Length: 108
Image 1 (cartoon, one colour):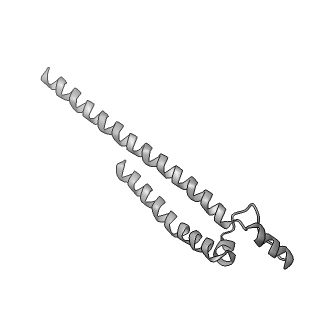
Image 2 (cartoon, rainbow, N blue to C red; image 1 turned 180 degrees about the vertical axis):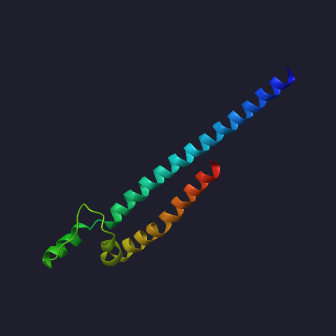
Image 3 (cartoon, rainbow, N blue to C red; image 1 turned 45 degrees about the horizontal axis):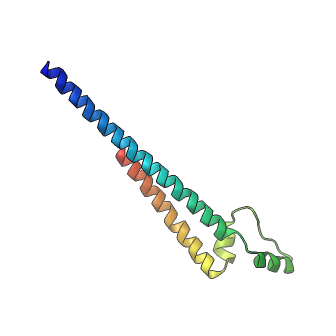
C-alpha cells in the first residue's frame, strides 16, 4: 500500500510540473505574439510615406509605394528620425524574438 501512495505522489508532482511548464510556455507565447504584433504595427507606421513625401514624389513625377511595407524606403529615403527608429526596430526585433523562442524551448 505504501508503494501505491508513493506512485500517486510522484504522478501528482509530475503532473503539477507539466502544468506549470505549460502555463509558462503559454505566457511566453502570449507575450511574444503581442510583441510581434506591436513590432509589425510600428514598422508599418515607420515605413509608410507621409502625405508630404507623396506630394513631393508627385511633383518630381516619381512614385512611392503606399499600402505595402517598403523597407527600402524606410532605410534609404525616410527622414533621419524615422530611419533611426526603423533601423533600431529591425535590429532589436529579431534577437528579441529569437530569445523568446529559445526561452520557450528551454521550458519544454
